[in-house]
Image (cartoon, rainbow, N blue to C red):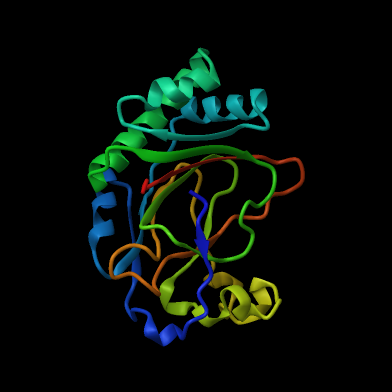
Length: 225
């Protein structure tokens, strides 16, 4: 579920028109099937009780690392077995199960790879693209994923193309203001390099830098081979 690729091909070989779509309506997730789109964002606002549940999980499980293969039917019980039977754990498990069900329904999958992680540092600090068809990403607590619009990025500066320079100095993008960022609660589908017809247009993204003594609760859902 952590498969990454760092392309160094000529950016002109990638699709020239690839944009993002966002909406406060959950139906927007179906727009991931648009050929000229490599990220869709459901701008959902987390209910206070769900935010509290996520914060409670971070407090009680600061080193949480869950990685499972789940189905829509067993997600709730599988995650709850690990998180426990508290009310806060139940609230979070219900939301995770709902997202897995949506993901599997959208892509006609019988199972999915689930990862729920507490982070106190940037898991993938460099901009990169994923060698997956599509990945669901949502941050329950803490700052969320950063990404670059396809049209402004020089993809030749990914991976070894950066020549050892930081992202901000490599020429991958021109201005810091080019960097976009999800909000906590947002549910995003990130199209990867393995999506049919999307080679050279996988969404460029990275983990955000975390301030000292802050944590992030991240959920990702992936296709299973």
